[in-house]
Length: 140
Ligand code: THU
Picture 1: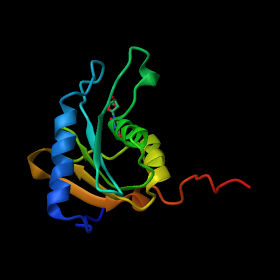
Picture 2: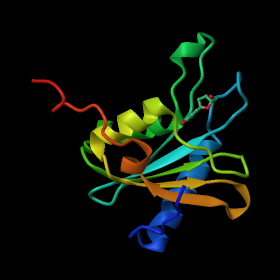
Picture 3: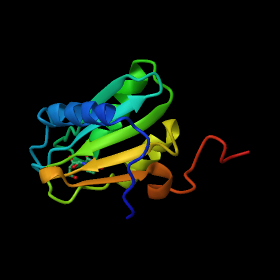
Picture 4: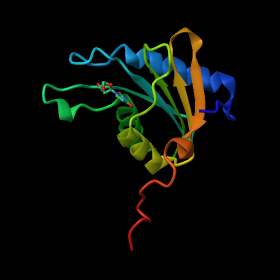
């Protein structure tokens, strides 16, 4: 994957990373022990965070990225410019397919910043991770 800096001011990306790291501590992951934090940047500049929340009925688990999107939408957001995702892996984890689809609903070309431990990071865009998504324009 090609890494790109994107056009986010560095202090905004730092705020997003800080928010994602803070919420990662709240992850509820008794099954996997894999804690994920995500922060999305709304078009009005607000940042919303979310963590993964697992369930004894495994399929009901929600990923951090979708939790962050739903948090933002519940606060009135309808357009997202960027997402930051943190884990405790050295190599930054990629968002799952379901999260890519949900993110695309609110910003199909948004910037994506994937952050690992020790400063490792990948910067890309959602349209590279999910080209040609299903949309509300996809049916007649
Ligand atoms: N998980 C996320 O939070 N985001 C992803 O994009 C992939 C996976 C979570 C779900 C589950 O709680 C744990 O990671 C292991 O799959």
